[in-house]
Image (tube, rainbow, N blue to C red; front, side):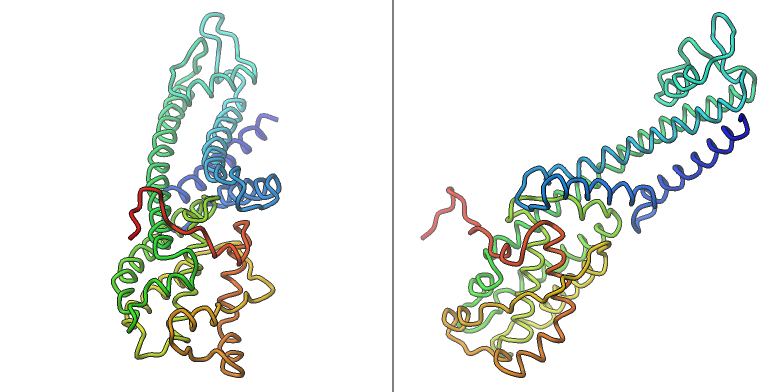
Length: 345
């Protein structure tokens, strides 16, 4: 029985340590345990809210994942250390009576030591267990400190994520409206500066998204601050500019391609998101032609069908991404980004 305690403790300690190190120090995702926790908590919130993206309870999903993740690390390390202490009946003794501690008392001692509060009324017995206890104390301090250090960049990236959403939202409340707002009567060159800034922000967000997968589960019920809705809207704008706006009226291709590739880089960082079975409907061509006063290309017959057959896999993934976040394709039409303090002439 004592050997089983030792083996269980060592295996559990190695597994948790590896998961912790991989999640915190390797900027390419999360460990298996952390990934399982993330998926489980996200699924719980989906079931709890009926996966309704407008439900404000989903706004706490990211926080719940972080708290559960850190709590799980500390709890499993706590029990693994306790199991190792339980291997030797005399590893921990009562400081006054010198009697061997029971399993529950060793559990208390391990938790007390990990929290770096000191030894309390129990103490390690023997030189080996004295050294081991010192290591446990340092481990507890290290994990708590690094966990806090890990949370700080996550919070900073969440702020950057919301900032990116608001920047896109300020361009227009829908893909069509973004395009209309970016037309100066002759061309869409005015969008070039906006796209240059956005491509840099999206590339950085995509890289952070790969390093901190929890960012995918940081939800916003406010459509103006929902990054997924805004990135999909921006991708639809890119589709319109690339394939439907006449070339002589289009913006600089390099700025357009940078944004498109930045969004592609983001899509490639996604995990556990399935494509929608159906492709979303094409943009509102009639509204664009009527408002812009220009004739769009590739919007009728075989040209339209062939184009959207090629775009199908990408747009199905975008639609699946929106549905995974609790919204639908119609949610791309958000509220007009205007505040009471704005002065409209």
